[in-house]
Image 1 (tube, one colour):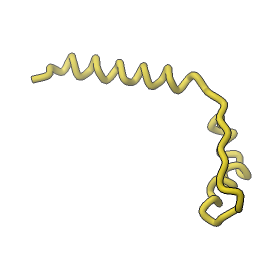
Image 2: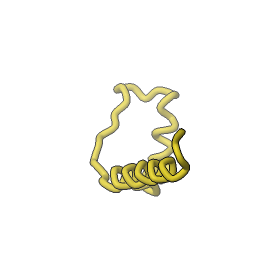
Image 3: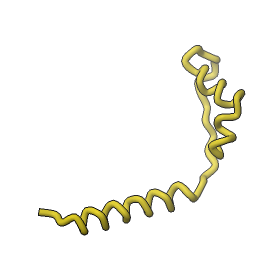
Length: 57
């Protein structure tokens, strides 16, 4: 049986590793297919209302 201390230590290690990985932003380019389609509306709306900018994207 795994003790509570080991579970806590593992959880903290995963949290720290995820935080460090998220802190290193990498520039990416996102592209849809060349036609503006209705299913892309959410992406265009996020650009228009500043959602991506607010999240640092």
